[in-house]
Length: 370
Image (cartoon, rainbow, N blue to C red; front, side):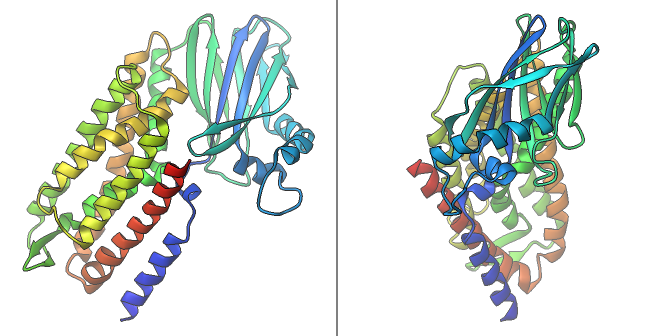
């Protein structure tokens, strides 16, 4: 009884979370280098700007346009302290334009244009990005840097807060490493993708008999179930990620994100009211096609650099797979060891799945409503 009560409390806690809880803290930083000048813009989520400089002056839980404009001075000061550009000849002098608001699928963002004047023609640019370092160590900046018709991308922040870019000879290998890391980071920070996969993997160590979940007697069936689900999900999202990355097929972001949330609800409730048991790989494949469009949305924000489009796409996808595999290897051995326990069969499977479904339903409603 205590086990069920504890699981129920966990479910209620999860259900109380807002839709923003699944969203990774990312900013979008674009720069174009022309001679000794760098023109750029930073998109920072309003929720992150509130953490950084406190936009909500009257503490009513809402950030108004007037409050944003009133806080621009504080925002500019914060950016000067946490974002610096330099080259061999010295630091580039930053100046900031008027802040604006840009709406994205996961909420409103501040769009802050800027110009950096450097001491000489920029041939190599060093970026020091430390936004939200103490407040949110998981925060990252997704950079697109263009010079002489060639785009480079990078993930800034954390252990890679300080990075240098050669604008004369951009390296294909550098692009591969950056997109690989971006793929890993996205799957680890994208809780919705992980919850969908987890919902499908929880029953992998069980078998349905006499209208009940029972533990598999051997490891081989569990491994086969895991392999089928992961392979189907990988194949499906790889197909749509590639199609979207090369602009062959595109879907509206709101539709994609809403269906991703709905896929989690379906996968999780299938554990509580099983309609598909041995063929869960079909659910993984069908909804994996939609998750691929979700991955593509992040990739489109970064852009595919000219001269390394295919390499970058492959690297990003490999990063997603590596991050996904790491999660599977961490979770499934524990699930296999616990498969025969009352906690796993009587609490984690039904109540954990119910909690996942409830949280995903909140996401679906908020995403669909826009």
